[in-house]
Length: 381
Image (cartoon, rainbow, N blue to C red):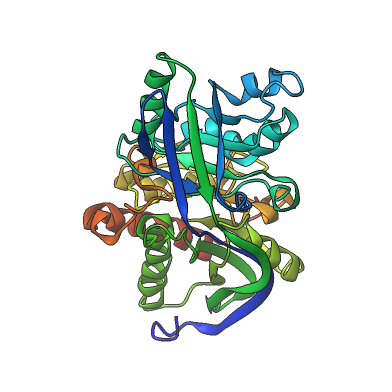
């Protein structure tokens, strides 16, 4: 940010609880021996020393798990087998996400000693997806892990031959206190510096890969937009604030910290790049008037990039959602995500997956949309 010439560059620290994975091992014992690819879910406690050996109960959905009576799975390992549908807008992940967040707690209520789920991904490679659970699992959870999609299908086949029995060993370290930080820089407005247009991304990632897609791509889009806007011959009328949020994967910790610290700031509109590299295909708004002239102005500059008008139900993105919930207007520049959950939270999220043409189009769309807000004469959306 300093190299780009941004103003007011700073870090804003906030506390968080730190969880670290350890050894992860799973092995089917019967009806046929087979090692299984697993990864611990965030906040999972460790298994007892020596691991857990138990029968596996296959459940086809979170709803079916919730419908089971108390003690239905006493002493068993529960595995939810529901697959994540491939969609271009992430709605498939939205539908199955609650399995990861709440499955362990629901399994515990029914007597389970551990919880497994089919990885929330759309590929068929033999690796598993990391991800957080509900924070209640810190004190109330049972050992929990994601299983690679091919291994879930293997377990379903083996279950037809007889009762499934397996061992599971997870050794995460106990949760401890730590900290992270948001990184902030600005281009100060020339006429209305108190009016802020915020664009963000997040700078943390899950540890299995390098975070190139989630959310290195979004960070690059934000900084690419900063570089182009800063290079324009005239400064914008309003202030544009670039925020790289910390600890998004921990549960929007950086976003909540920012919203509390800056709740008195005059945020005109907020948005976040956190769905891979694009390209951008749609514009969603969250304006009091869906047909506000600003929405029409946005479409005039975005249409030449192949962007179409979407809904008026934008959420802005994960880290800015606390501000949107408080009433701040938002836009979504909807990105193509058909392949996003092939990589999301996995060891395969690496830099070689970045495609220059896709990310360049996304930068262009963000610059066009942001400049519309920064330069529009009068906005009240």
